Length: 128
Image 1 (cartoon, rainbow, N blue to C red):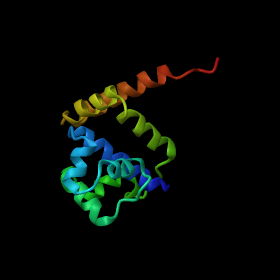
Image 2: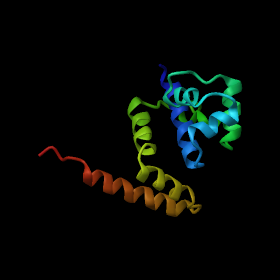
Image 3: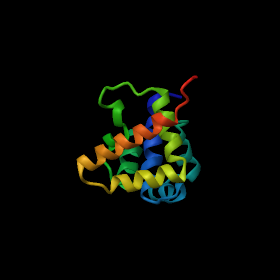
Image 4: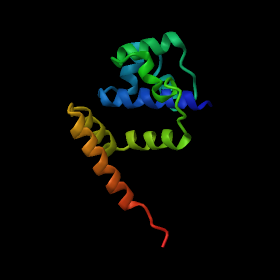
């Protein structure tokens, strides 16, 4: 399993959930089984270019958006992928993502991000 396949799968899952689609809904729209969508989302099966284009069309994003940082040439470590999977796997994380996506003001988004970072750092063990 390659990291890029896991990251693409995670982005597919994140966007699918954001749009309120089930794996079965997405599968029907692209002509595969829901089990195949599950394998794409886990990164177990690689998504071919034509299938990626289909998925992106259903999810209303450009295919490049499903690659995220990988296309930008930035290292995306396993911890980042795991954190993204953990967030989108929880109802609270998904709700936070949906609400955050509705905020259009950049300054407000940056303020919220700063607040979340402060809260997260306060939750980390200090090692004492």
